[in-house]
Amino acid sequence: MPDTARRGLLIILSSPSGAGKSTLAKRLMNWDPTLSFSVSATTRDPRPGETDGIEYYFKTRAEFEAMVEAGEMLEHAEVFGNFYGTSKGPVERAMSEGRDTLFDVDWQGGQQIRNSSLGKDVVSIFILPPSIAALEQRLRSRAQDSDAVIRGRMEKSLAEISHWSEYDYVLVNDDLDAAEERLRTILTAERVRRDRQTWLTGFVRGLNKEFDDR
Image (cartoon, rainbow, N blue to C red):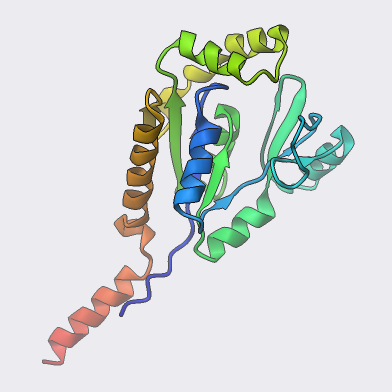
């Protein structure tokens, strides 16, 4: 049997707030428990029910800025007055162990990861809502944010959606089950691309040697 070891993939999910990327990320993790979820650091306050190290690593602004200064962040951005970012170390360890890492990030974070030294291992997917009305309804149904925050998120959605063409894949989340099935298909196909399977060259050389030895 061939050695099927490969480098891990960096799977980026982006969308305007409320389009369903976090829900789809959770479903993908349930489908494949080998996926590593990249837990971001943030300077925003925890929401009710959130736990440090689970939803986010909650940092002070000074702590976050120190991590950026030390070169520990793979990506970071300021969103609605708070910093969000991804620590580089856990991602690099997962990749070296052949484990895929899932990122729930905005277009700025996705852009930074694609432009990083790890960019060749990125698979980027943008999630669109079926309509702007549906997007606003999803935000309001959370009952977590004030009207002012929701208005800010809706205004930002236009800028978010304008970056859809920068992604490898684009899905319209008009049906959650169907969107999840398409995500599974994308991940399955990307894992078996020729250039992902680093063991293939040696395996084919072995096949050729078998012909020579006949």
